[in-house]
Amino acid sequence: MSRFLVSLFAIAIGAFVGVSGHSAARAGTIPAAGWTLGVTSIQYGDDVVALTNPPVPSVSVSGPGGGSASLQFSPVPTPTITATATGYDTTVSNGSAFAQGQFRYFGQVNAPGGAVVPTSVNVLTNYSLFSQAGLGDGSDARVSLNVFGTDVVPLTASTEASNNGSFSKSMAVPVNTNQTFIVEMLVRAWTFESGVSATAFMDPLFSLDPILINQGYTLQFSENMGNAVATTPVPAALPLFMSGLAGLGFLARRRWRQASAA
Image (cartoon, rainbow, N blue to C red):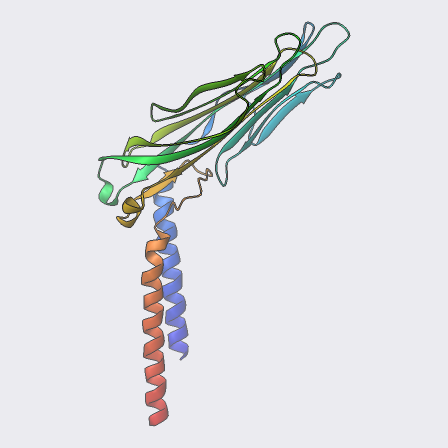
């Protein structure tokens, strides 16, 4: 019986190392994610406070009079960016606030055997826009999403309280298997007068057609970027692993019965 437990443990370790090694071998092929442009700033009178190329996960600036600007980023479970801005109230003049984040990361549809063939990836994008009307110029909020040269969400704006709301868009984007594609997310919030605010938010989710998954296709993204999809063929390995355990259990039970009968 002890041999059975040792064999079971060895099989479990082997399966885990095999799957983990497969994932690690592919991880280095995807370029790293990063900011292509990021500016968060506030302005009151002739004074400007700005931070460029904000670090993940967030950055913000603020000052007297209630003005602020911030970028918040979360890479998992799905990449999201939120930009917020509120204009300053100063004794000299109204102040503006500006927050923009443009984040780029990479994905790849892995096909069995390494073949490079046309396919598609499904993209479901949730985003929201809010801009507040003011006495003067008010505010502006904008978002866009481009995947492999396709404008999944073309530059969309809410200005002076127009087009406020939460939105969702789904489409299949043509890509090539075993070749990286670029995902570019842009969010911007801009206010032009005191006490007026704006917010922009974006959250894209990628998935594959179930038919492709059954054929062994997988999705992979830049390191530490999640999209709520399996990046390793764990589901396909589990049934085989469990059947092996069942077989070992049957053999152990049979040996135990033979030993008891003797």
